[in-house]
Image 1 (cartoon, rainbow, N blue to C red):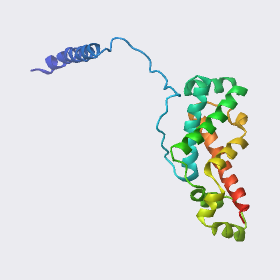
Image 2: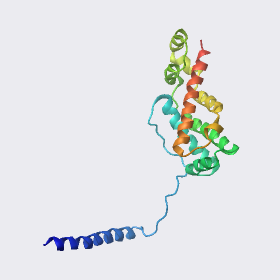
Image 3: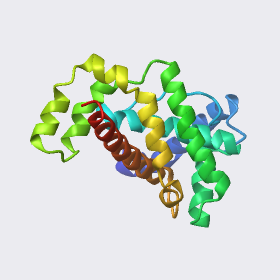
Image 4: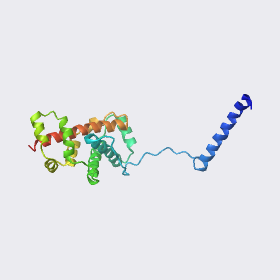
Length: 203
């Protein structure tokens, strides 16, 4: 077969292949296109973290909290972030929904047994607490059972959430990733500060 004949046959072969693909698509309901619907934030999803320690804990907390906030406002996660980005200034209802969503996430994690004991988070919090050496050493010497009896992780998280300036955190957002990053960073630092401050009272 000459090169000319071979080149002439390629477009025809391509048309046959495309026609075959279209026929299969139509046979399986591909004739009608519907855009993907946003995930329903009220449907509980399994959330895992890519990180560990306090950062991993707060990552999961924020993902669940944003879901709960969007569900409370009866919008999708994507729509919530879009509304926040458009206004640049969150409404009282949005701020309240996010705070209550984070609190709901704490309760869910407590119920499903995924909240670690406070003693597992303490070393990480102390690493950044900036305490003098003697005080830090004394705190690290406290037995885990004493720490866990005195400090409950859900209580530490709820106190940290209550202290957040959510109005500032939610202002001028561009996308969901930025929302999650801002709140994660703030909660992570608040948890570290809260743990370090409260454990000093045990001495």
